[in-house]
Amino acid sequence: MNVPDIDQASLATKQPQRADHALRYTVRSLALLLGAALLAGCATLGAVPAAEGLAVINAPVAVVQQAEVATSPALSAATITPPAALAPPVPPAPPAAPALPAGPTLPPSTALQAVTDLAQPVAPIEAPIELWDRMRRGFRMPDLDGKLVRDHEQWYASRPDYIQRMTERSKKYLFHIVEELEKRNMPAELALLPFIESAFNPQAVSSAKAAGMWQFMPRTGTYFELKQNAFRDDRRDVLASTRAALDYLQKLHGMFGDWHLALAAYNWGEGNVGRAIAHNKRTGLGTSYLDLNMPAETRLYVPKLQAVKNIVARPEAFQAELPLIENHPYFQEVRLTRDIDVTLAAKLADVQLEDFKALNPAANRPVILAAGTPQILLPWDNAKVFVRNFEAYTLGQYASWTTWSVPKTMSSSEAARQTGMNENELRSVNNIPSRMLIKAGSTLLVPRSAKVDKDVASHVAENGHMSLSPETVSRRSTVKARQGDTVASLAQRYRVSAMDVAGWNNVTASSALKQGQSVVIYQSVKVAGGKTAGKGKNAVKNKKSSQTGKKTNSTKVAGIKP
Image (tube, rainbow, N blue to C red; front, side, top):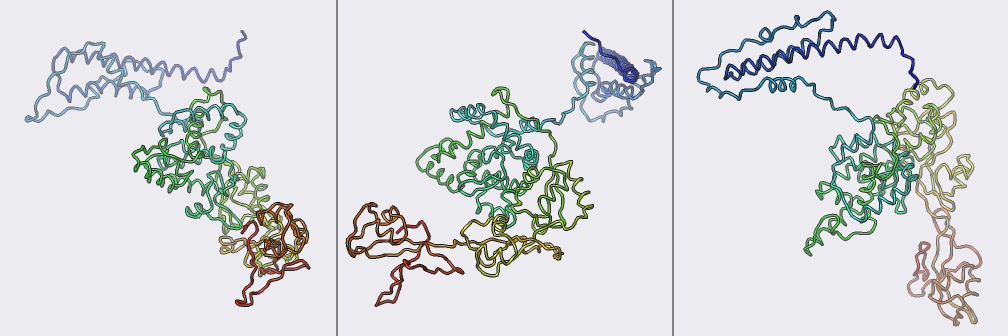
């Protein structure tokens, strides 16, 4: 076996330290032996008054503390002050106080052990190095067990790549969530909830329009003061959505007094959980999470969270590897004083654009408006870099975009013409789908010229909105079949699908029609300036009733059948 080279400088430094530790150990041992001898002597004298006994026991400890301060190699046992000299004079007990009974006589070995126990230092409680360990210490929710939990343990354990992606994404956010939970004295398991809701993807949007890593519905987000406008969606914001989610969970726990029921309500709604509990009470059934009749998604919700908790608690049992997450903040808040392009902000912070967006997912436009978003999040070590580069930036404006209020309802092509933009660019920047009209009062992002010095005003940044309407609507009309008409021939005449005509009228596509038979037709009509206008030689004319003067046909939203 090779012997490594010894660093002589390090050895020279350590030798006095080792000598010092040996000296302290010798002094401590002598002090303890002296204290034991004193205790043994006191024991042979019979009863010792309580105050005197306490002074004797504490005396050797005081000697040890004083001796530990001395580090000179010349120190010897002769320098230890006798305990009697250190013990303060004890005043006599008041005459009326009853004397304490004498304690049992202690053999010298027992006395020595007592002094040794007092002299032992208390081991400090070290802060966990890994955030996972810190979370485990904060697990307080009652465990759920059963087949559903085991099924989901197996599901996650059999997909290590999925666990790896989720946990890697969570590294940016977990420390903040755990900190907030501890401030509120809430169970640390709740920090794992975004694994279930969104796999820790702050840009996730469900089919029901829930958004962000905590998956807030628009209405619920508004209730918990999450701003949603043309320039930002706080349901995606790391700080705001976490604050709202914990507020909501605390509220639900206060309603139901049970974390499992609170989680069910977070997923299903407090009204539904409350009604399910009331139903079970009326029928004499239990009211715990497992007793309630609930949708499958809610039934699986807590078992999924329990499965993830079990894997985090004992990763080795599931052959899972959790990435190192240091018990340290990942990001810092940085104040914004000017509007700034997202790409420029990432560049000034020296971070990848993808990482910048992951920390600032609420910004859903290419520019961040300082009046509406007064701070951004940056990796801990990049915050100072951003501030330094922001102050030194001299290459023009921070923002290349400003806002424009649409004066009247218009098409995207018309808006592009008036703002000097390409139509595709205008639609892309402002998230405008094709074949949609921009309604009057909408706020659009448009290029900012060098002559524009002022940033976007706060009332626009806070309240800007986008309202759209379809360029065409489906108009419902009733027509009369001609002699020899079929579904196919009538559909061809009105330029619609024969299958659609058959569906609208509950017949088959090959059906023949009787002369004068009423047939329902839906036609797309282009909207101009917010008004419908029927055009084309085959457009169905509006007929008026000779008695009421009202139109006999009607216009309905596409997809709604009679």
